[in-house]
Length: 152
Image 1: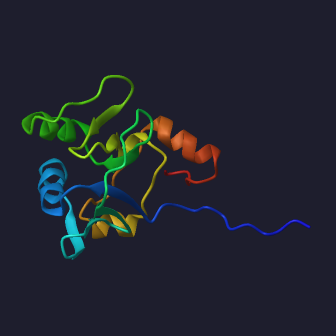
Image 2 (image 1 turned 45 degrees about the vertical axis):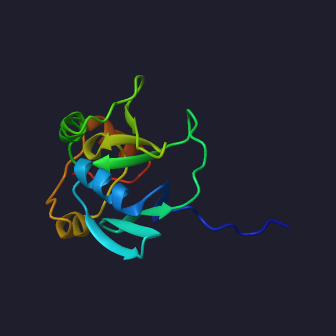
Image 3 (image 1 turned 120 degrees about the vertical axis):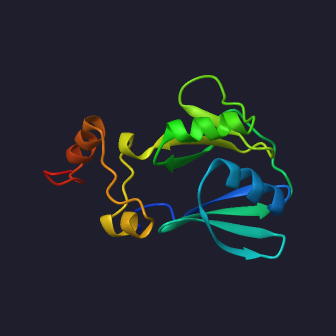
């Protein structure tokens, strides 16, 4: 008998282990513009990303590895790279734009218009981002999956 399985439809949030919430808010605040969604004392903080969020958790440190990472989507990878340089954050060699935070978390930064990840027009408007477009390659990927209309 086959059981019905729920369909994976997205990611609500990602949780990152950090050593200190205040230091993490300062570090990430220097690299990204975000609203603080909330905070639970000195143990948790939540970085708003529109209809999603990043949870920062003061926890025992898990060992870093070479492959495990979280992908953040930004409106401008170039602006991110400049902010990283200004703050002395080293970008990792290899494919993509990656860095490690002070707690060993590996973050990959991708630009919204180059990937399939999409937010609704209402969410983009609510975030003050207007209408971010997609590159032709990203639009084609979305169309092949039936996830974009003719206009994009």
